Image (cartoon, rainbow, N blue to C red; front, side, top):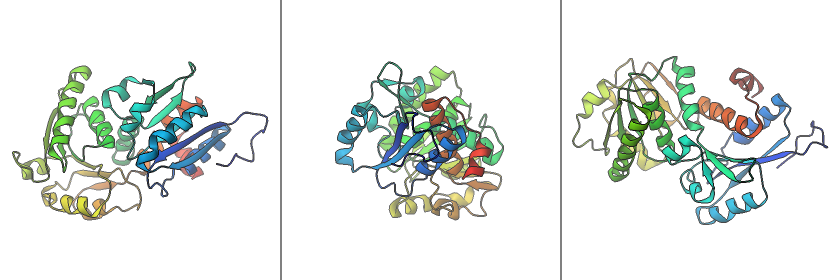
Length: 294
């Protein structure tokens, strides 16, 4: 990690970084570097590319050094729950963490800023609200949990979870019913495998307002996505892929011309990063200012 050269060296820097696996592509170090300059906060931010077998050791080392905070990305958003002492209300409900902060009491607390990032990015990219919308989520991992929670919280009408492992989709479906009760939401949630057994696949896609892909890009997953009745999507529907590299993902390229507008996950990344930075420093950066700085 490099200390910003233009900061007062007598001001103790804050240390943070991103934990993930195969994350050389990550823009988070650049984003947080720019936010540090915009806010005049001396934040030193690094990238920790950790193999799965050594994540626990690496993260405990991070804690022993009393670093200020961390972003958590795939595949550790759920596993990290085993290594932190406290959770925010939303992170505890969702069961996934993407931001960790060293609190004033000396313990680490987990947050989920993906929820805010997703909701705000939908408004920013598509100029729509999620209330009363019909949505399809592809995937049932850590990122999809935040998306599903956000849809329920915002009052989406119907939400269909499609996942390769139907049992995992069922588990998420059961948790969604708990969230509905706590959030006093009337959202209807359904789940299915990619074969769409037990549901009217074409009808679900015909009335879909927004489809969100949360599946990590791979050849196998892309073939499964191609098997879905995407041609049934309305030309008035929207599509989002939470991946941002490459900018035109295979999923978005597949939907080119089939939806009214599509977006990758860059704005979601920026907006969740703004929330993480605020948790660590108390400074909330304006999105327009950040984009200009980048």
